Image 1: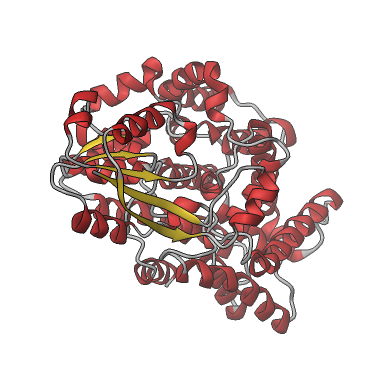
Image 2: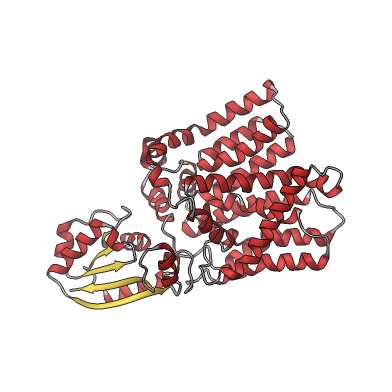
Length: 476
């Protein structure tokens, strides 16, 4: 029931056949142009700040003949599996005879905005979410660390450095709270973890020298951005934020209620006794994730996809007994999710501006207006990738395009400059646009995408944003 509902909502939202977003270009370029060995060795040599396992996984799918759309379906299946595993752990701790609560639990997991905002990403988020959930389930069902649990944790570490969260949560429960260490069981677990984590550990060592590339938000701004992006699925901007407040309130109250139960050690309460261990794991996941993300200054809510199932579990485990209040809770959860599903098409109140660029319209404008010999200068990575796949001469910022030297740019009969708000921050793009303009004049302009929150965002961040998101200029 849960799996079918989540897959169907993803299809209704148009997730699988959508254009790529900026970070996915790194994955697509790697799987299309590099071999397995190049991906692995390049990452271990410091060519990427992310561990290599997720890219190798998508490379395997690409090698099997799956295109981007099919790979997104696989990514969504992985994410749904992560949610389904935690849902199963949650249902096992509920009263089997209380069908109303069990239905509410399923609804709570289905109504997770981040499931649809990031679940189909061609990045490490779905792979890591699945590994983290399976690791917790294997450990929980065994009641102790196992070689399989160690291998899963190691693979998670070779997918994302955030593997420290599930690793620390489960090991603290055993070594700090239970104070147990059995050489015959714990040593093989640790060895298996270290062996499978070795690519991730090497990548972490290299990335430690590139802390500036990892940090993308201050310790003050990052939590606010993460909260807005997490409960809005990384899609709902500032103006729709009030729709997220009920979800935020429910999640916060649930985490607080479970934390208080934990602190009071209310073992006599039957519901607490049944759900206590998972409740503590869920609270620990949320708390440690918040600390790690804020400390690192990471402000990408997609990175919290692996935590989202445990937030859902906390909400379910803290559900009020009154049926009417349960309906209110589920309705509060469903509101932002409904908006997320409705706004996977370009919105005028975006959280992430470049997600609101109507790529199909931009490419149609290029086909209609740009001559066949036109060269392109763009700060928009998705357009850089799409134009390069068509064999066009493109000067971009991400290295997704193949060689387009100054001679080709100068010889082009026309030049199309595609600007977003970051264009002027990239020297090579400014220089290329200046060279293109010296012997040409602008003959046509068009703007694409609208951000009605641009002025408010500018005031809050100090970054000058235009209401339009992308501006196209044709120079002849």
